[in-house]
Length: 388
View 1 (cartoon, one colour):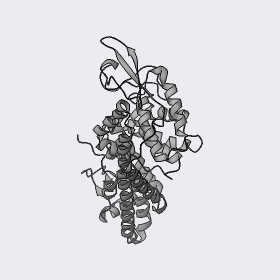
View 2: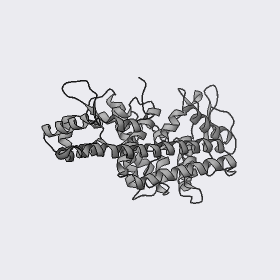
View 3: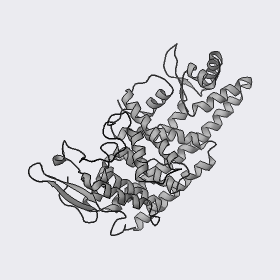
View 4: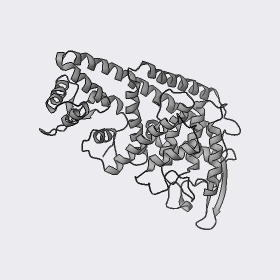
């Protein structure tokens, strides 16, 4: 933990003296003061990020079914965000679980990722009824942490004790967030900032994420909640029609710089360095998601063209194909139940898609076979792999 900080970032408050002494960091309210210095580099990064974000939002209107794309991207973000926190589950593990296929990951890891999906969907629904507020953040956090590791640490409630990041205690921690008696004040200031219409939404989301992580208002789940906050702000402020921007892939790839940039804000008041890093992430992830959306549209068109050549078998095969864009891992009993068809009809549809090269068998078994739409999943999977 640093012993001196720039007045622009915040202030240190001594909590304990002596050998085990430590100070907690209390951030100043947003926006930064002096104001953010938008030099030529930042102006260019903002323009490029906004253009890329606009192209991504345009996908909402060109995709044949944007909700399918969103369905998978929420799951990808859930996996990546949970992996940053140490969860050992891949996107394949989650999709196998949702397809009722026994996978390699532990139930605890899968439950953490499933909770993230639930919290994201719940938050988006509630945004239709509630403004982006501390009340909503608490509700989402309760869903995020329910029944998982850390679920005993007051889910949905702001902390009333000191927490810290790194180390075994505040005295040897890498960073000590505000003391408990300052948390509600800090959050109240953040809530006011969330509704400051003078701040461009893209900048607001980046500034608010860093501030939330610095406040660290919960005993657990702060990283995941802070990353969710970015998507919620961009949807609430109508920058995105659908929540298609998820920065966990960028934060995971550049994890060390992520922590260094946040600490530079706290120690040096370097909001400009953080925002430039964040805008680079917005550009890269927007471009990657837009490219993925185009690749998926092309694949869907090729798949449908193949299936329409099946004649009388085409309607059932097309119904299965549509299901695969939500559940790329399937078994024949699962297909029969989901499509409400007989087991022989399900077997025929699966075998037809396998013969067309759309499905591949991945279990290696003669019974209880598992099939995967690998061409589709490979487009979305990027960055979610685990190296066991």
